[in-house]
Image 1 (cartoon, rainbow over the protein chains, first blue to last red):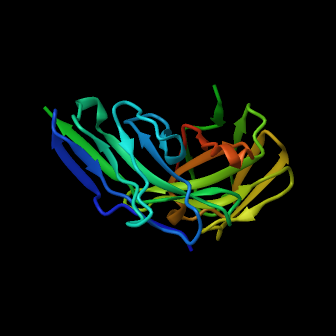
Image 2 (tube, helix red, strand yellow; image 1 turned 120 degrees about the horizontal axis):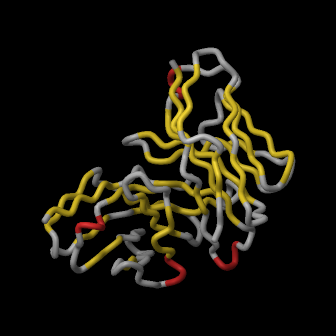
Length: 110
Length: 115
C-alpha cells in the first residue's frame, strides 16, 4: 500500500526565513506526487506537481527517489504562506485517487 | 476554470437520519472522489467513481454509499448517520488524462455535524 508521511503537524517560522515542509512516501512503482495547499476558509488547491518541475509562489519541490522524499521548500517565507499543506501521492490502484499525508500547518510570523 | 460545486457548506443532521451530500462538476471529468477531512488525520478516501454508474470503495467506505447516475454528479449517502461521521467532506474530480499528470480539483467542502 502507498503511504505518505508528513512528520510535522505544525511548523512555525519567521517572515523571511527559509522553510522546508517534509514529505516522505512509500510506493513500489513510479510515484506521481503533488503538494496541495489550503488557506484559511478556502478550498484545497493544487500547489505543485513533481512532473512539472515548476516554481509556484516561490515554492519548489524536488522528487528524490533515493530518499523517497518530496520536500517542499521556499527560501524566504511570507506571512501569506501561512496555511495547511498536504503532500499527496497518486494511487494507481484506486482510480488514481490521491493518498494524502496528514498535513503540516505552516505559520509564518512577522 | 474547473468548478466543483458541493450543494451545502454546512449541514446539521440527527443520528439515524439518511443524509445526502451532492457534488457537481462542470468539466466533463471522468473521475470523481469523496474524501473526509479530519484534524490530525488529513484526507481519507471514502469512495470514488471513474465512470457513470461505476463506483469503487476507498479506504473508509463503512457507513457510506455513493451514486453516480450522471457524469457530472456524484452523491455521497450516509445510510444512517452517526456522530462519528461528523466531519468535513470534500468532493473532487479529475480527468482521465493520466499521462499528463492531471490534478484533482476540489469543492469548497461540506461541514457536516451529526447530533
